Amino acid sequence: MDALFFGKIFFGVGGGLGVFLLGMKHMSDGMQAVAGNRLRSMINAVTNNRLMGCFIGASVTSLIQSSSVTTVMLVGFVNAGVMTLTQTIGVILGADIGTTITGWILVLPIAKYGLPILGFSAFFYLFSKKEQLRFTALMLMGLGMVFYGMQLMKLGMEPLKDSGQIAEWFGRFSPDTFGGLLKCVLVGSAVTAIVQSSSATLGITMTLVGTGILDFQTAIALVLGQNIGTTITAFLASLGTSVDARRTAYAHIAIKVIGVAIAILLFRIYFPFVERMINLIARYGHEMSEPAGVALAHTTFNIALVICFLPFTRLLAKGLERLVPNRHQEEMPHLTYLDVRMLETPSIGLEQSRKELKFMAESVDKMLDRLRLVMTLDKPDEELEQKLFQRENLLDDVQKEITEFVGQLLSGNIPREVVQEARMQLRMADEYESISDYIVTILKMNIKLRKNSLKFSQDGRKEMLVLHDQISEFLQLVGNALMSDQLDGLAATHAMDNAIKYRIKEYRSEHMNRLEKDATSPLTALVFPDMLNSYRRIKDHALNIAEVLEGEK
Image 1 (tube, rainbow, N blue to C red):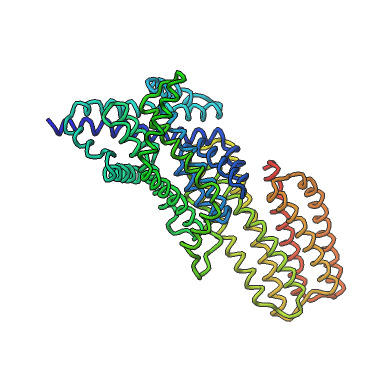
Image 2 (cartoon, one colour):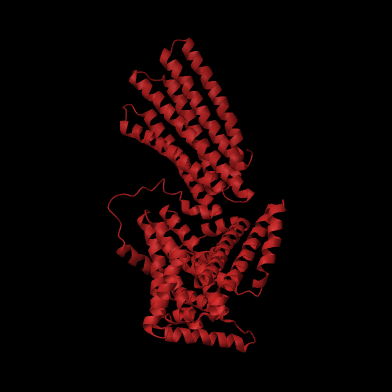
């Protein structure tokens, strides 16, 4: 009988928790899809201004509905060298406030309508052809699942109210003593670390309080522990990353642990303060339920963290730099930018892969500069040539990683504008990789001439350098548009394209004249047009990138 009783409760609460967690994911996905561009602009707006960082952290987390996802995202950005440790601390503090929105959503007086909200939203999601409406419906469907999951957990826990054994077991976790308070905090931390969702454990706590199984004071103590448990996700995400990325995860842990430690020491002040706030709100005609009081305590604690730590973000960053020193060996700055941690936030993940594209654009510019130097040297520079080969191999790997990363993003449930951006990035990565191939092809032709003790005529050499400079200018024009997101400069690309075509045609004709006059060797006569063709292919690939940026292809 006891096994049947507890089995029924286990399946009821477990099923409700599963629906709750799935609802949180759908709500987050829907919000991200609806607010994708705003999320990207927010992340790009992060500066060393700690107040701005805090505001952005709160805003992004309110949209994503998960502080864990936000902090994991920050670990990825720091690992990529996109953000600094000091910048992320302000964002983390803001994320701690943003995550408290979930608690207030859970106390909305529409919990009993969770199933109808879920049902009606599902119809719109399944049958609507308008993308914006579909993702809004997905967000509401997730909200309905969150409320319905809460109802299922509440119904599953109802029989526990009349169980003397359960009442006795929960009585062991009373914060009346310092030891009991520590027990509550440890239980809250452990359960949240296992579930890896403070929103879920907060929901369970609010349900236990709402059904009368848990007293209000114990719930507040558990919430303190949940604030520590939620840091486990960022910690796990930081394993195997750069030193600064690990420091970001440790910053999140340090803020929470220090804040909770202070709250434990001042619990006899903190708890009455929360009660006074509830009474003050009630005095103005807004009676608060105990679950709402839990949400208030959660918000109060995280606002206090911001007030205490925000003025000292630089000091905290310096402390972490001392505690977690840099290793002597160099860490790979590239091929770590694209991080699977970003797959939870496709819109922001694309911003990260876009930075890899910018790295590819900078790389081909440098390769052209080095190639020109190789072409002008009287004596071979094997070290310089080797650097060109190495950079081409690196860009092969970067293109492969972009393709795999963006391919994974496309496999998710993402809006059309994100799909279009992803396809554009795949196309541009392929074009830049092809450009690097042709640069190395030209290098090999130069090496071939040198090994055969041959070189172009003075006129041929001059023509090739003029063409090289024009191609380099063309590529820089396209790269600048990618870097700055300003497409005005691309208007000149089509005129430059025609000018380069004309110049290649002219140089080919001049070369044929030299060949007829026997002013060039037979092997040189073969290499020169091949080299012109390689430059033409570089120009074609650069033009393809310009057209992708303009949305023509």
